[in-house]
Structure formats: C-alpha cells, structure tokens
Length: 134
Length: 186
Image 1 (cartoon, rainbow over the protein chains, first blue to last red):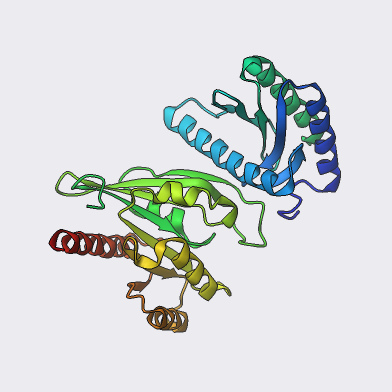
Image 2 (cartoon, rainbow over the protein chains, first blue to last red; image 1 turned 45 degrees about the horizontal axis):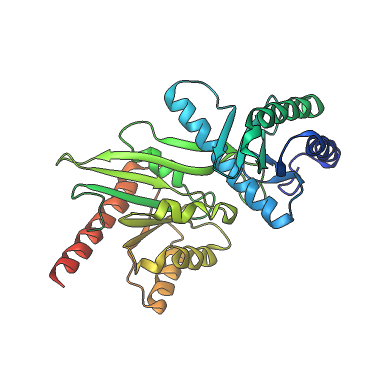
C-alpha cells in the first residue's frame, strides 16, 4: 500500500464505480472526492486532479476537527459535517467500517435539496462500506 | 502588542511530518491536548502510525492568570492551507526539525520561508533526534542561519522532555516581550 493508492487498485476501481453511480443519481452534485483520513484522494467525480487533491486534504482536516470536537463534547464519533452557504453545500461524511478510514466529500450547488443530498451521500457511503469492508 | 491580550499568548509549533509537534504540545499542556491525529497512509514520507490532519491544541496557565495557547500545524504540504489559518494572531513560532532526516537543510529553508524567517514574528528552532556524539547537524544549521543573517535561537531538544519544550517556549516568550518593548519604544 502506498499513499498514491491507499486502497490498492481493485478496491480503488470499485470505489470509483460507486462514485460514478452516485454522480448519476444524486441531486445538484458538482463534484465529489473519496478521501483517506490523512488527506489523500482515493477516487474523484467531476473534478480535476489538482482540485481533487485540495478537496481531499481539506475534507480530511474538516473530518479530523469534527472528530476532535465530537470527542471533546462527549458525543462519540462525528459521522458527517455540513458546510452550507447561500449558493451551495459541502458535505463530508465518514464511510463506516473500512480500513484504512475513508470519508466522502461532496460539493453541491443547490441548497434546496440538502435533505436529498445527505440521503444520497449516506447511501453512497453505505454502498462503499459493502464494497470495501473486509 | 502581538499577544491576544496582555497576558494571553498564542504560539505556533510547526515543522515537517515526524518532527514531534504533537508530542511537544502534549508534553507541556496543562490539560489533555486536543489532537486531530489520523491513520498515516504515507509510510514512505515518515514511518509512523498516525499523523495530524488539522491541528493540535494545548494550553499552559501563567502565574499572573494569563495563559499560553499552543497550536500545532500539520507538517505536510498538502495541508498548507491550514498554516495561515493557524498563524493568524500568533505571537511567535517554534519550528521543530528532525535532526536525523536526510532533507534537514531543505526543511529548515522551507519552514523559515513559510513562516516569515523570524522577521514578521519571533521564531525559535528546536532540532530533535540528535545523538550526543553527533551534534554536527546542529552546527551546520547554525551556520546556515548565520549565512542568511538570521539571528534565530537554535536548540537541541528532546520533544518528549517537558523541560526541553518549555525552554523553547520560554525563549520564544522572551523574544515576544523584547519585540513588543521595541515596538513600544519605537
């Protein structure tokens, strides 16, 4: 295992297929990155390499801060974080029970569909869990 | 005044991955330090189990009811976006380096440039993992700083030892004080 392919080639390919399926069905998604907890891109959707790398690093920092705050507040693990503005949403959600730990960062341009977006992102994370957990 | 309030100081620990920033903050924080350590998937860069993905945070209470807020940065360049966020309102910077690392000189130059060469806010450098028999890397770095005309204090430290880390913090706070006195007199 190297940092360039934290999952290995087969698992990375499975993850990419799942992400492509998510892109076809989720509402308002403009880009998405599946990332390792230490900020490496595993798979990406509708985004160039440089932006994917940056979103992966930032998504992992957000997820790490979320976990630290959840621990400090005594509310166990942070499952998701939502960054919401007038024009869009960034959701960072943990993929459960996978090793190495992964999160999915999703950018969407339609705030009105936030509930649907969270639902679709959660389903994608569960599908990734099924595919990738050993 | 570079301090947050007269008795509140924010100082930053930075340096490359594996230099001991998280360990240093944990060694001196009055209460359990906050860490954002995650599994390290890049053993080629540094062979350790975890790495900091966002920041470390600790705090030391001062005798005059003030406190020193200790922030640690992630070391890898991909987390560079965190550096200015954490640098904001800092009174000084402690750069930690791994004295065993083959790219030690490059690390010195890289973090000097990224955090203002001690010219924007005071800086202190701590070099870890040096054996008593071989302090040549420390002498080399000292010479390098001299050639650059940068009078930055440089120490041999073991970041696991509270006294060593406190020496870095004390030195930095002295520089902060001198800096502020200079500004007031100017």
